[in-house]
Image 1 (tube, one colour):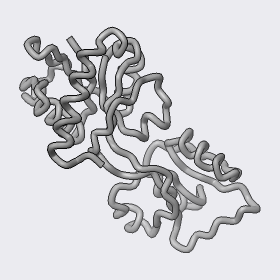
Image 2 (tube, one colour; image 1 turned 135 degrees about the vertical axis):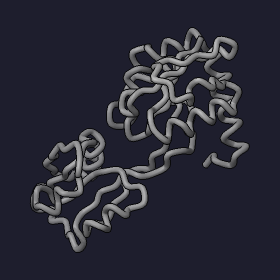
Image 3 (tube, helix red, strand yellow; image 1 turned 120 degrees about the horizontal axis):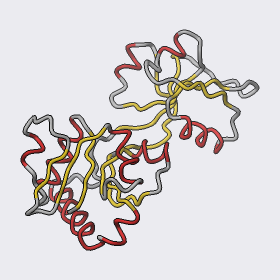
Length: 212
């Protein structure tokens, strides 16, 4: 039996649909039940919903053999897992944004508000730029508006929220999408089962023309 951690929410439902189309369906997953674990013994899979940012933890610690996590989570927390496949879903980007008209002054420390501390730190280190990280967990857009920070480092999908708050993206850091990840120990002991899932999902993605 393969234990699979799915991210809660709309993305998770789309991800499950890919698993189901690949031949690993478990209809109870979408039944609306308050159960936490759903399994299909015939298909050899057991699914459970978890908070998206927790998927990598469940996989790294071995509670799940497989999971689906965003590239942002993988880069931020650097879990000790195998990244097997880009699902080409949940596409967005990590970007630096600031108030319109902002000009960076390299003579002073740049104040960056974000909940992605490691990503921001690595990005600016690669540019040899001194920064002061201000860690926030919500309403990141407020920081430059209220003068708390010069810029923000955050996920951008359409950019509408930024524009509505008189902000604009000024630099892209990386592209983000959902990735299939595996526990390292499980991959060694359940190689054939995990590879079968990976290959089946890859086939569905290619058939749908989703692969980049």
